[in-house]
Image 1: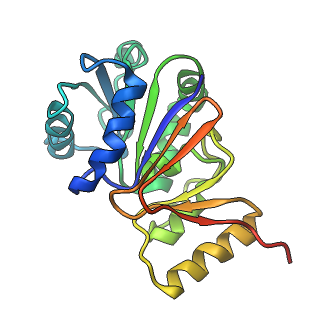
Image 2: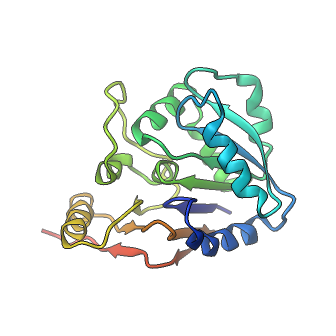
Length: 214
């Protein structure tokens, strides 16, 4: 059964409502979480912040894996043995490129469908959708070497984090939904989406755009 958590961010207090769903999916506060970094973090600056975030719930962010600079294949067995895997924020296109280069797309798909909880933050959440091109709507710059924008395809909707409630923003979201003929969910910081099996729960004031046929 797929168990997925989409966060716009993990910064503001409003995320506690999404955190509660994550704890329910994990079923234990003794869970071990593995972390995949979107890009090299040699000082573990972002990793340390997330360790502290999860510690408030008694959860252990136990393992750091990066894909580009200091990639270590011997960490993968431990990574996929974790109760959850955290896909960090960053540049979605760069993140996807290195997941492809390391041959981890199918392993993550299998993990999410049969093993543990997959937690995506911003870019990490976009990766769980069928196509990562929605990253353009939150300002990500395409990474030239990337040739396939296909995401993990764990859901059938598009996702955009960090949305703002302006007419211009909503028009851009609607235009993307129309162009892809796919439902798009836009999350403000503090909002999230939780997928458990076939049940999709929108947490917070999630913007929903249904495609309009031309």
